[in-house]
Amino acid sequence: GAGVSQSPRYKVTKRGQDVALRCDPISGHVSLYWYRQALGQGPEFLTYFNYEAQQDKSGLPNDRFSAERPEGSISTLTIQRTEQRDSAMYRCASSSTGGIEGYEQYFGPGTRLTVT
Amino acid sequence: QKEVEQDPGPLSVPEGAIVSLNCTYSNSAFQYFMWYRQYSRKGPELLMYTYSSGNKEDGRFTAQVDKSSKYISLFIRDSQPSDSATYLCAMSSVETAASKLTFGTGTRLQVTL
Image (cartoon, rainbow over all chains, first blue to last red; front, side, top):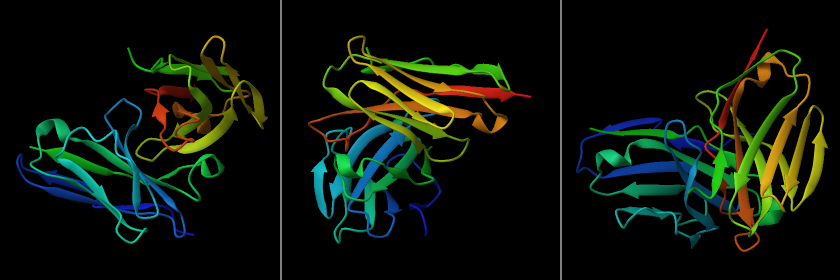
């Protein structure tokens, strides 16, 4: 079946603009995760959802970052008033059940965000 | 200091060599340990998962966890050019039940013919 998909794959925006990044998880997966990955670094946790409930948002850098998953499927990560330091690869992952029984997270291809 | 430290490499080995990849960590609450492989321009994919201490073997891959030393390893036997990728260790605590992963920086491995 289809894996995790993300759109757009590439996004170039001007400083100060808002951006919305979309993640479509594997069908039926309960849990959805957002990470940010800088070049040459491992993914850095941002937030995660079980169904539509945001369980942990401790990794969001500041209040310009928000995420939602209103129907427990597709999720949107929104960055308001973008800054150059927001430039990175944003990755989404999903897992079947969440918690340790669904420990395997399947990652999407990522959205490369460039803020000019 | 980062919670998880990993030598970024690059590590270059000839085909057929045994590869040893390592991570150290500082958070004693980590109980779940994973190794992900990431090919260029792709997302990470899970290779191995280990709970608490001990060894786990899967084909050419062996994962080891030494919680007393806060040290984990991934061994690759009979390395192949197709193993060339970045290897990321990832960890999680019982509290977060493997939902919140803390990754190392990744080690870039190149297996040459």
